[in-house]
Each structure stands twice: as C-alpha cells, then as structure tokens.
Image (cartoon, rainbow, N blue to C red; front, side, top):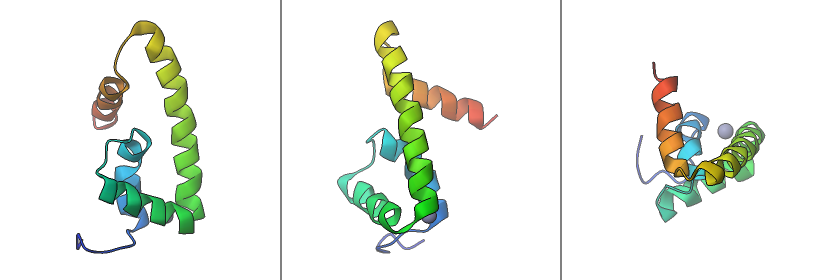
Length: 81
Ligand SMILES: [Zn+2]
C-alpha cells in the first residue's frame, strides 16, 4: 500500500488500531487512523471497544506497575500463536 495514501483501508486501520489506542504511532499515522475512524463507523466502534479495554487494563497495570506497552506486546504475541 502506498505510504502517501491519505485515507487508509479498514484492514490497515485494524492493523494500527492497537498502537493507535496506545498512542505508539507517529503523528502522521495517528492522523491517518483518525481520518479513517471519522468516516468509518465499523472501525470507530472497534476503536471505542479497544480503548475501553485498554483503559481497564491500564487501571489494573497501574496497580502492579507494569508498562501498558509490555502488556500490549504480550497480548499481541499470544494472539499470534
Ligand atoms: Zn474502517
């Protein structure tokens, strides 16, 4: 996919969504995902779901002092198995 493409596809959004929720994307990528979420109800719904889930995880993580990004990596690794 062309990196200069302004509006990204649902598939690309989904691939970036976790990092987007975690704010680990570059400003440019954040903007691309934002643009897609603004026009795509399905992805926006998924984003809100993931955001809520991550927030719940963060609340728990704060108690055990583990970086949210680490948990994100762990869940990604588990999802890939
Ligand atoms: Zn979409």
